Image (tube, rainbow, N blue to C red; front, side, top):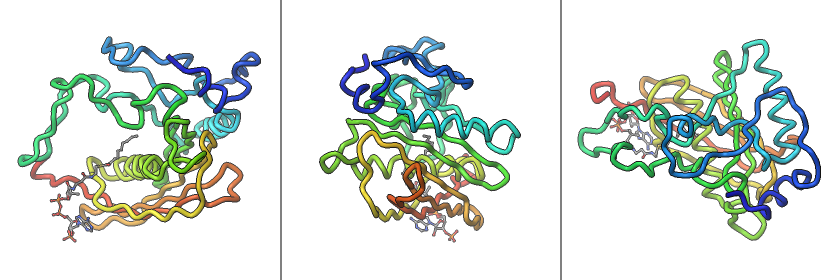
Length: 236
Ligand SMILES: CCCCCCCCCC(=O)SCCNC(=O)CCNC(=O)[C@H](O)C(C)(C)COP(=O)(O)OP(=O)(O)OC[C@H]1O[C@@H](n2cnc3c(N)ncnc32)[C@H](O)[C@@H]1OP(=O)(O)O
């Protein structure tokens, strides 16, 4: 269940008045955790929910407008890596992953915390420009230094955004290298924009970079460069 303290902290207006009626679809509430009914598995968690702050909603609406001419696409996001719960291919002959079927608790790390308490985000991708943008509101369970987001939480969302950018352009790939400069701390429950782009492709190597900025674009919180390597086609 959502804790009202977290809700108040991240979305102060939510408990006082009715929700805005906005055009994009909304996610009213999340299903109970660890339930594997098919409808639960397919809940798209990148849609607005009551824990989203006004900034988060405004940004989401702005990006939804950009999807209208087809240049940008909103990327749905699920708790499970394989929402159909089909068998995941094994890419590594020497280091076999645990199959999700054998570990039903397995779920995508950034989607593993309760609504409003952890990672709230939505991603949009531009196929022509090979760019992925993530709007991200980090909740109170992601605290590092007092009142600010943990560096690991920031790195998680940067890696995820860079990963989506690389995967969308190149197919199945993993992070081989991630270099982050943390320039300014991110207050808990604030909203930031992660802008990522594919810079270069060399064979199986996908070079991507990103920055993390405040909503008004005035504060550069973090920057990163990263290398993703497409998994060896012989092993796929
Ligand atoms: C919210 C939605 C989220 C969806 C996206 C999720 C994104 C999250 C992604 C992750 O977090 S993945 C988890 C963290 N990453 C790993 O656990 C990867 C561990 N490393 C590996 O499995 C292998 O090292 C890897 C698959 C990356 C590469 O191994 P390979 O055997 O396929 O490649 P190889 O070692 O032959 O290297 C291929 C090329 O990459 C280069 N390379 C590999 N690792 C490098 C490295 N670390 N730094 C620089 N170059 C590197 C290597 O030199 C070579 O260059 P050349 O082709 O020019 O010779």
